Length: 121
Image (cartoon, rainbow, N blue to C red; front, side, top):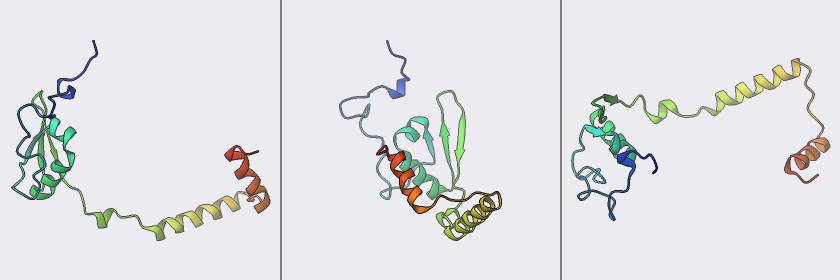
């Protein structure tokens, strides 16, 4: 007998115990709830995140009675990758390697190293 949490067991042929829950798959059609279960987070994370954006925060309730709050922390613009900063860090790293005495291999040896790594030689 395998050890399986009850919310991980198959529900029915359609996947839901008694029809699809009202808040699942209805983003944009009606107001989303602000309280979810761990089961909802596991099965429909996108809806939980949509509700988090709509309400500012959502509460997750576990079977043991614990409650957790999820809040968005920032917009995509604040978290975006800054390639200019990364290029500057890479140049600084290469300069540091040169100061330590690292000499990169000549191009013909680089090609041979690439073949060795690929398992061709």
